[in-house]
Length: 254
Image 1 (tube, one colour):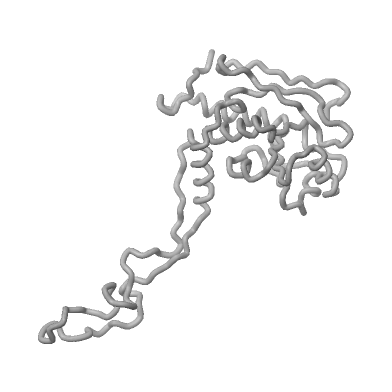
Image 2: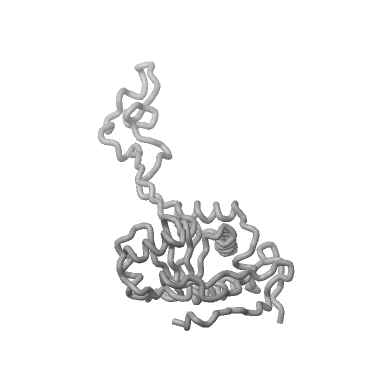
């Protein structure tokens, strides 16, 4: 924990940022009921200040909702339907149309042709560039709507669930909050406090995704999570193996 009596200014010079977009600044808060703002932090404009693409956000949400879906609808084909082993009538001489089995798809109660089969997955891989731009669009939208908060750390003075609920209520963070840290080893107090609260969740920064951010009213990031997020997203935005069609409109300066 840093000394809260000293103003905290976390300013960085971004060498690969576009000149047309100014760097964003945000207040750094704490999870203490006595003090709120302890300083300011500079955010990279290519991560937190892009124009939100609603179509890309929608593609990410649909992808995340579908890759968990497994269809259990099942229909039986002709060999799987019970009965129908005997030919209903002779091939010739009756004047009727020829049939080999009463379980043919042409008959009522017969098998189904090209019907749904059980345990069919809806998984497909979304392109990497679409996933990256989905993160930047969602983060920028959250920041523009004042639904993105940055805290010094997730250290709290109490492990009571009422403490974190009262804190979120006083700061008007909404009914659901997602806390993100740069490590998966969360502090003890906040882990115990949010364990029984369904609308408050903890997540490491490497698991942050579009669906989880939209599912919660407020996104709370630690300073370490912000820097780690910027590092990974900027790495992928400036990857040399991206094609010209998917490349970002700026180039990394040497």
